[in-house]
Length: 97
Image (cartoon, rainbow, N blue to C red; front, side):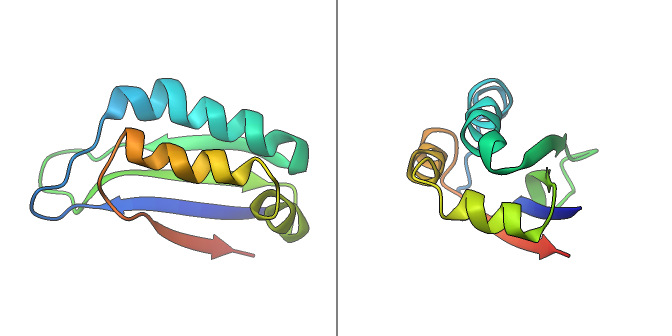
C-alpha cells in the first residue's frame, strides 16, 4: 500500500470550506482516482483551533504505481481545479511508500 497525505497548512487570511471538502471534493477525488487504484480516503480534522492545518487527508492507493497512474490521469485536472472551490491554501503533499 502507498499513500498520499495532503494537508492544508493555515496562514493569515486562509479560508477552508470543510463541508464542501467533505461532501464534494473528496467524492470527486474518489470517483476520479478510483479507477487508477485509490482504495480509500480518510479525512483528519484538527482537534482544536490551535492546530497548524485546516485539514489533512490520507489517500490510500494499492501501490506506488497506482499513485503514478492517478497523477497522470486525465481526471487529475478536475481534481486540482476544484481546490479553488473550497480553499485559498496551497496544499502540502507527502507521498509514502
